[in-house]
Length: 113
Length: 113
Image (tube, rainbow over all chains, first blue to last red; front, side, top):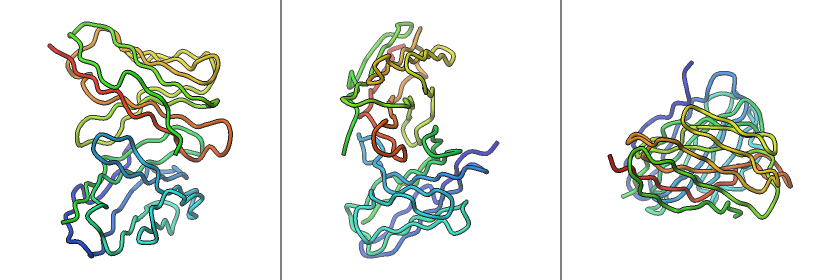
């Protein structure tokens, strides 16, 4: 079946702009995770959804970052007033249930100029 | 945040050689996951381990969940050029919540044909 998909694959934006990154999880997966990965590092946890609700958003770096999953499937990560330090690859993963194996999408490479 | 100790940091081997890498933690884990990541891609799940002492294979890859529940290793037999990539261990800690994966810093593998 289809894996996790993310759009866009690449996004270049100017400092101060607003961006939205989309994640389509594996069908039927109730858990969805967002990560950020910088070059040479492992994935850094941002937020976790169980169904429609954000069960753990402790990894969001500040209030410019926000994510939603209104129908318990597709999720959107929103970044306001982007800064150059936000440049990274944003990864999405889904899981059949909490505490289970996570399957990752290809990521969105965000570049803030 | 908490991280796993993953070693070695990098390896450069000849095609056909066997490879071994491991992850250790100061606390007990109840799940170990091994991922491979290639440039421009998201991490791909290789093996999932859920029981102490469990030994699981996936083709030329074998991983074990340490009996103390504080470590795991991944072996690759008869390496080939397409094994090149970064291998990450990750796991859910027993204490606290099982919502967040804790990650190692990765082992970068290069294979000389």
